Image 1 (spheres, helix red, strand yellow):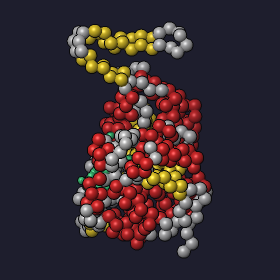
Image 2 (cartoon, protein in one colour):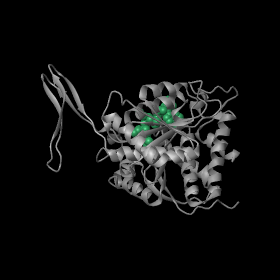
Image 3 (cartoon, protein in one colour):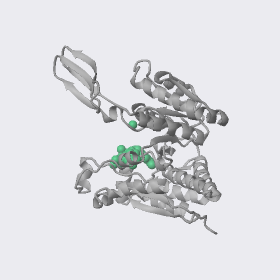
Length: 399
Ligand code: NAP
Ligand code: MG
């Protein structure tokens, strides 16, 4: 057959361990037989990050700014054990953190919903996508352990020599703790814009929540920025698209999310997004069925699976044992990137290919052919538990 053509290459960020093994299988079995795949390849495997002094991570992010769309394999974020295991010269930073800092994005995470893997929450019929603000708050904090009586203050010293601002945090009469956090109008604005754009792009309502009744300046600023940007730039486009922007208190949002039928985007402040995305992915069934895309306010997209490198399976694989690792989220990272490339370049065949590969993947599971993690939780009765490659080949046979 004639392969589907591409015009602009994807930025391909290869990774580590079991997901690196899956990466190659997906390309060989599911993509290159049908698509004349064009990529600019960056090896973010830990060995190559070490060899390049992590320059390869920066280069891959810069390439994403140039080409617009990237697909990323899971990568090891080194800890002390990894420094020893890989004989590293230093504890390199999280590649995702480095890429996010360079692209200044918002991370959207959505579960892949299939029949037979039922959410724990009975009312959920459609996916719930979390948009997590990925800057500031407690993730860039300054903390003090207060040894005894004394006063803790917040002090702002203007760069232009103007009047200082000062507020008492607490007059301590004994030992305690204190914390200073911050955020930036510019970062909150790009978070808001990325969320509104993503809602429009996917045709879903947008929810946002904070604790503005308690945090009357800090959280209130988030609420105001979202509302101002919505009124100025998005209200009409939302009306035209038949979707809504909805603000409520975070505790009310949590209660409504549980009662909802899904099918919306939930924009979360940094900490809320961290916690709620883990809760949602578990409640929807499996971490291995969660996709993730980083969307920058400048319109760059980076697609990946939400899970890690599945280290335990990799050690089994190295020992020559059979593994049953779920490749669905990594497949959907590829289809997400190919579809976006197709949309940007006006390649209908490429968009249709992405749709078809996703459908073949979902059909395979719904026909009862799945990896062990899903076989353990499915409500289907006649189930075949496949190993890593068998599952990918079962999808290929449906293509
Ligand atoms: P993980 O790789 O997500 O795996 C945790 C456990 O979840 C696995 O041991 C496995 O459970 C299950 N699991 C996850 N994905 C699966 C899949 N596709 N198929 C089947 N089961 C799956 O997290 P981790 O073990 O905490 O981290 C391993 C490495 O990944 C670390 O070095 C970490 O730095 C890195 N990491 C990278 C990213 C990223 O690049 N975005 C994200 C998170 C972690 P069982 O073993 O019980 O089968
Ligand atoms: Mg978390």
